[in-house]
Image (cartoon, rainbow over all chains, first blue to last red; front, side, top):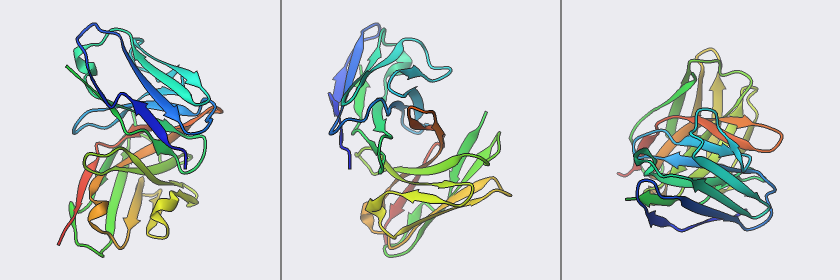
Length: 106
Length: 120
């Protein structure tokens, strides 16, 4: 199985901060990498697919980059509604796997 | 827009079968793959498997032969059955649609999730 490792596991930030979350795959996954936002009691939300494509309706302050084994999710200016947990997911090979999540709090 | 809602028992006894249904509204269930994902308390997300509307399936080997999924196109629903459950199967279970492009496959949208506890 491909292991997905996110860093950091958690971070504290303030409104307006630029936040960067990293996801590393245990082997090359090309750009088969997606990012999700999770909030308690709510349906997880797709933010980025194929490493850098912004899902329709997702604010442009979210961006993704990377290819191969190293990927980044960036929030350019953190907003109050962005405090959540973010997870990456690879769909390069079965079984599809997720990172352990990065919690962004105040 | 398409919405998904999980339903099923919130408590299952050890060694029994966990059964959940996902109802798709706002769109047809046809021509997509439909997936189950779970999140044990304090842990990351884990992909269980997906089912095509044709009935073909793809499962995470971690679940070996314990899992089956099915689709009922007449009801716009798909189901998960996980047998021989233990406490380790306690988790929030999500259903989701699988989207795809030439570059990736992803889950969108998701249901809100349902907590299933395995306990006697």
